[in-house]
Image 1 (cartoon, rainbow over the protein chains, first blue to last red):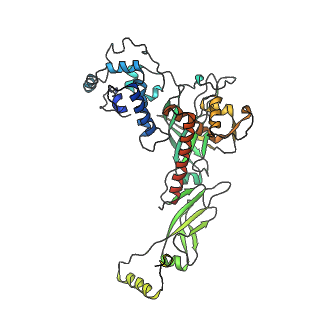
Image 2 (spheres, rainbow over the protein chains, first blue to last red):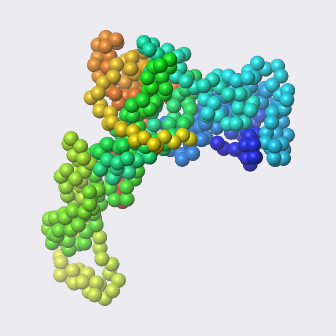
Image 3 (cartoon, helix red, strand yellow):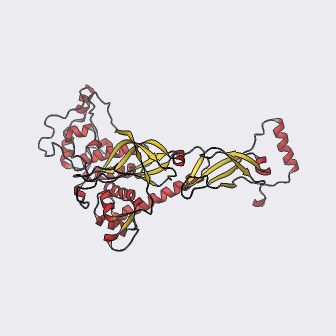
Length: 335
Length: 106
């Protein structure tokens, strides 16, 4: 979480919630809501591509949790930031003043949203821990005999193309955005050892039985859904089940035809290039894409790569072609 | 962070032909059936088997979509139409990114 001050040994540091939301201390409740909404849209884990979006979103949520509530905001405002920072700097860590919450009723735990695991130690030192984020009976899912089934979790994971190609057992670290009993976003980082089935494709989901939220009153646990994405591969691009490879070829290989080596995820294969192939030609290797009931194909796109004309012999060869071949590459442009 | 790597978990691909009931979908996300009904009315979700609401079935791969819809509504204060618009735009961005990626030379 974005802390503005150095952590102390005890770990609790003062957090400037106004600074987190980018507003001054005297703004109206409406202004605070606007600032929060702006940040939420910018850093929402479903929408944002920024690398630290989840942390920023969490920080904004925590700040908004305090500042949207007139009582909590008033209590928070009673803490002198300079004094809080000074006590942190003395090494004792932040301690709320003894009577800082006098006249307010929220002390001793309980706040409207969020998961205690999700808010900072600073927040907890002020407002206590929230209710344990169990599955929400309040949300009104139909009841089942023998307790209520836990909710499902959804997380996005990136895997290597090779793992999908062959199937593999991998440790996956999940940073799952999720909603708790009060419906606020929470985050949980977990590492699971998962057997990835062969042939899974980007955009597909994997289901892990019983790895969601625990059930209530003896109900079974929910499931974990993993949305699969592939890490960028240095050679292959992915289009559904098909793989696309840019294959560099020499001008004479393209002109005269040749059999060249081409990489595939299963190892190199021999690829026959027909004579008079031009740059951009797509050659299909049937069934060499991602495996499955209908395996994908691998397309090799020819990229003609010129030998550099940086010595006498090479230059002489290019000059001979220029002299002897009547060739205008721009004929189609009418020039 | 919790580590749970002693056991190897087996993952199954969620096939889009697999269907779940309305009740299952509601329990999955902790939402009311009425809310799912609103998503259907806005075209966010398409019941795999139409007809009486009690008999609705949904493709099993719609679970993450409903979770995302719920987060968008709660975190960004969107109404159901806003959620529908955001999801459509997110789908389009995803498709465009995929096409861009498939056509970019490496």
